[in-house]
Length: 124
Image 1 (cartoon, rainbow, N blue to C red):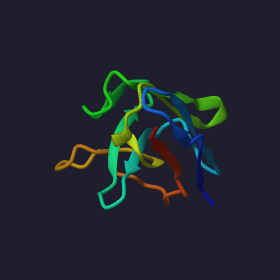
Image 2 (tube, rainbow, N blue to C red; image 1 turned 180 degrees about the horizontal axis):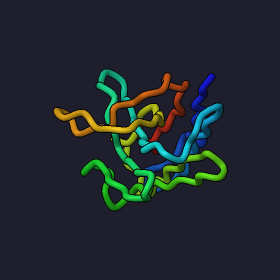
Image 3 (cartoon, rainbow, N blue to C red; image 1 turned 90 degrees about the vertical axis):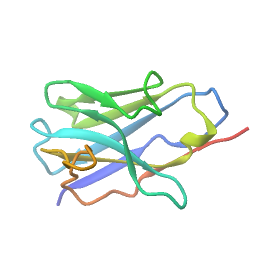
Image 4 (cartoon, helix red, strand yellow; image 1 turned 180 degrees about the vertical axis):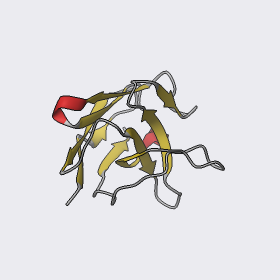
């Protein structure tokens, strides 16, 4: 059974950094586009970063210039390096994969069951 396991979250002060990891098991990792999403309390889940199988990346405007998504195909891991964190980055972060984007939202259509996510809290 395919599993996505996110880790690396925690409590960090504004301006700090965190590196999130997403480990995928029981699946063919390489052909997929991978994305990180986040969901803050009372808000809908939103995509923050995407990396295609080619290595091409795109980011939400809110994190552009601060977050970096990368992938390690051999290890079946996707990373999200988060720098210059702000209180508004506080959310549960999830990863998922897909092969196409939603025509209305422009977000990757997630294909796998969601993992438990990892909590990121930015607070002084």
